[in-house]
Image 1 (cartoon, one colour):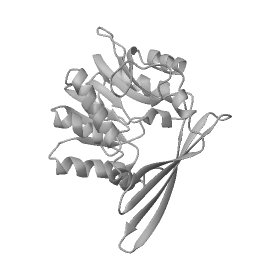
Image 2 (cartoon, rainbow, N blue to C red; image 1 turned 90 degrees about the horizontal axis):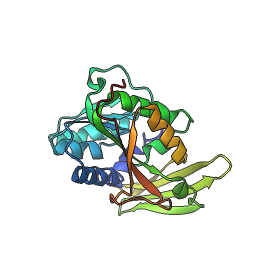
Image 3 (tube, helix red, strand yellow; image 1 turned 120 degrees about the vertical axis):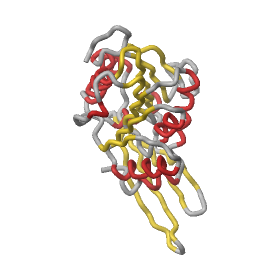
Length: 252
């Protein structure tokens, strides 16, 4: 499983900043939700922002190592957040995940790009459609096909600090239509440097895939935006999608 040995590196390198910033942007433009479900919550960056603003928050992630950091962060900030270790494609029966009980569901930092099977996006959207209240929002961002296909064999320095260096080697396989981030890090402990490595794979979801998945979940797309909350174009490498469950909809 990814995000195990990499979890503390992810946290130390500040990669959760994107999720926290996007969560703050969401709250600037949409009404404060009473209950939020953050899918693929990672180290809890977005969940912490929602909770700090008064929302009741549930975070779900498959990695126990990422959730451990999320819990530590919540305790340090005096925030009460429920964390559930689970695959977002197969959420367990849980009273905290009651149908039509969330005003907002998020899945941020291109987490849905890491679902690789054709049916995965539809599976998640159906679950979201069940858990959202009528009028509730589903907000997620994706690396677009344009963005992923630009990963042409180059290295990206993710973090360069006194005791930590993180490099992401980005490639795209046009035959398999898969993008790969080979993350290599060097961390200093005393006088020694330790090396670690993980490879993450993403798939490009076409607009037709996204529309079909949302429709299967009974969800309606209301906006395609940049992370700065401006209208997105077909050339943007990352798009934030805002969808909602229609008011009066009884889909469960």
